[in-house]
Image (tube, rainbow, N blue to C red; front, side):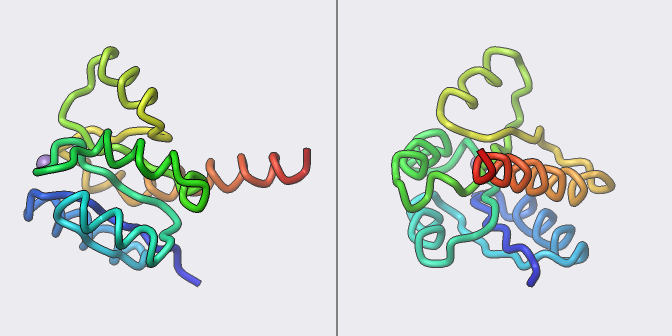
Length: 133
Ligand code: MN
């Protein structure tokens, strides 16, 4: 079965670009344009990975990530932040909120699907290690 990626992103162009790239790479994609809808969709659909824009109307991406990571039913779902910032300070804040990694916008259209795949694989390997221990 194809991996399902939930994209939570309020910028329409970014959302459609990421969706098109991931669908072309064989992923199933779910979309949310705000964290409130994204959180509901995440719990209903249990995606394999969530791409989380940090700057959202209403609840922001960091708060939404904290919400998911505090939920035993959701905390195993990897969350990759989408951020326009790439400073070391931001990487720390992103990690502290519980994100499993981040990708910097604008996304690189050639490498983006591979980066998402790598995040999925890394997480699967981590889970397998935990199960074996
Ligand atoms: Mn945004």
